[in-house]
Image (cartoon, rainbow, N blue to C red; front, side, top):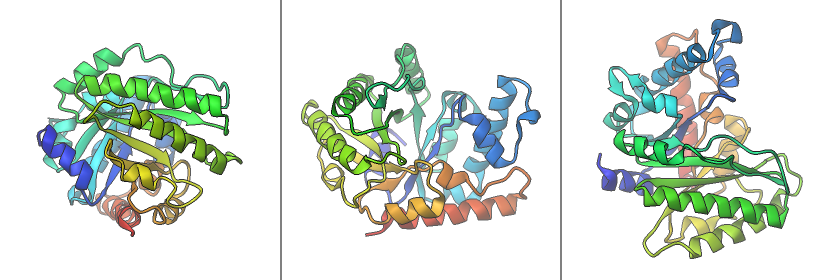
Length: 296
């Protein structure tokens, strides 16, 4: 797939985007959920080898390449690795899946009700490498903890600033201003977030598009104007700590948003499952997530 074909697949594909981008801090938890405890690895290289083996098993599972997964977000080390002797990006594209790369370097300490991204001092080199590896786009996460207008303004401004750098490098940015689903003032804060995103979109150069990855809103349909916005290629939803069933039930009430789930996709997969058991568990999650993504 070339860039135009990948853009069309993401804009119009009937499916969802798999989030396979757990990084250093979240990898041990992901491995424990998979049934691989901390004693199974003794250093970072072994830890990342274990998570790459899990991701390779997901990518090569028969159900993963049946057209319901239209994109996948990778961690840098996963992008650098291989799946069945092919680069991970090429292995995904061989299965009709558009590859993205996580580019943030973690979260700063909370201030003003938000956690901004840490300084992205490796961004330019990572974008250059991502282009050579055939990636279509990127993803970067920051987190809103409370309805602090000044904090949300700074967070969204940072997302758009970095997103423009990414677009200038020829990649499609997924902006991810996650709203903590445990926040008591989320409905109020999501009003502020929507207004700030709309301001950011209005300031984009003519013809430029971004993607948005957002927490499933408190009020169904809250982000409808973003789904229909000419500067937005696609709006995707994160599962945010919800179980698969909870996330899918809430997502189904938001037409136009499709899933970009991690926990909601992988929660029933285990290291000791046979290949047939693994594929059945993954297929069940995929079907449930697709149904919620395409619900009208």
